[in-house]
Length: 213
Ligand SMILES: [Zn+2]
Image (cartoon, rainbow, N blue to C red):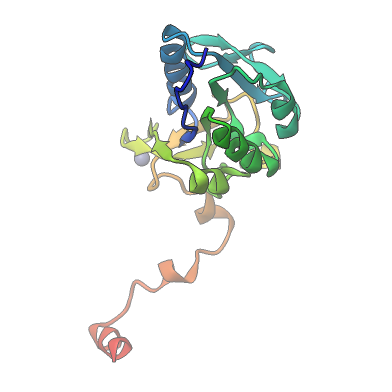
């Protein structure tokens, strides 16, 4: 409960990264800390993500907190109570573009908004509303997984069978995806021509000089 005269300054935090990077665990960690401090928290997730359990945010390590599945960002707005201090949203990449306005509105109202989601899809493209969310956020944490090929930090979600589905992400995972570092994320190598800036590795010093003039 807000103390008289106590001003709550709203904020937007984004935790993003590839699959298996512990995004949801980090969201849950932040939520649980707030709950220990008796702050009122509401947690949402898109209705599309129904792996494991319908009403829980479930991370891969089975650390769970109760979450409400919603079909649109406007549904979140309708369900947030005035007394809610923290709004957490998991798998935020699946929401419509209105999510950007929604989280800004909640932050303006004094809410601390905590978002977790994939920053890139399996092609390495920015995922849904994530670029905008990252831009308006007050705090961004990119978390990395471990590359299944070399053990380096992995920032990409590699789809092992890209032909199996044309969706941006198949929900329900580990057999279809693995975390890869940039070097071992070779989606584009097999399927399309490399962008031209990768192509010319045979430049002679003469050419280099002339291009600088
Ligand atoms: Zn690697």
